[in-house]
Image (tube, rainbow, N blue to C red):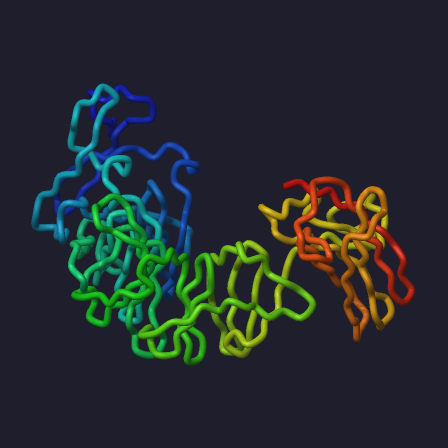
Length: 397
């Protein structure tokens, strides 16, 4: 009953929605697989959650019920109930029709969302940034949006694809990542606005940033590396050496998210969860580890082992490092000797353990002359107080 005739494509049944007293049609999102959630924010009993195809959803009762908030077409700079709008879609035969369809309008594809300290809602899409003063309070058919796109101006957005939106806890400025989407001249950067999106200041031009965070006096931007600023983004330094006691982080590590508590800073990465309490002078890392002890929660039938290597097979090109995990039941000096399949010595590593526990050696696939070794099977022999064991490592480039 709520479908418009004339659409014959699979999954293309239109539903109707009302905005400003006018009835429009939209494509039906038929499966959650087509619309993964990317981010949400909470204020009191309100939740706003942003999705890929479903766009922006709002709950007034902490997620028990949801309603869709419709976003402006890419072509307009604002959306108000008093005006009429046109969203364009296309049928399978190429016929153009008026329909709210995220497949044909990048501003309907949601990625980032923020409720700022004044209860404004900021929604980042692949078509720019959308700002609403009343998205938390107005009926869904009366939400007003200001829509800002990349314009090519130096004080505008660097790119239309907005992945993360954050607010500085001290000066209330809004920070966001910019990625290139479709328009000519777009680039990677992060931007800051101090005037609700009237103008933007660009930083880290040309660098792909996944998230922005704040800790004590520092601002962090993370992507292929960790960037840090102590002067509100005027200058940045790359943290090239991540100091972790007894561990190493591969140079190809990707950093995805950043968050802080009053005590310290957390950064999610492809190698695990990093944590620092001193603005990056030293770090701890947390990973999901398969236990050495048998009968664990992952496998109740598992037997205990004294050591293992991971990833295994190991590729120096892809993984950079292989980790050999073992239990140091006694304090003292431990040695890892690497041999090839003919038991010719390849390399030797040492570590001094001052307290008992599980530890790891890391090997980069190079010999004692700092040369990359050939593909093949290698044997790691671990020795230390109360420990003598070996692991097999399969190395493939």
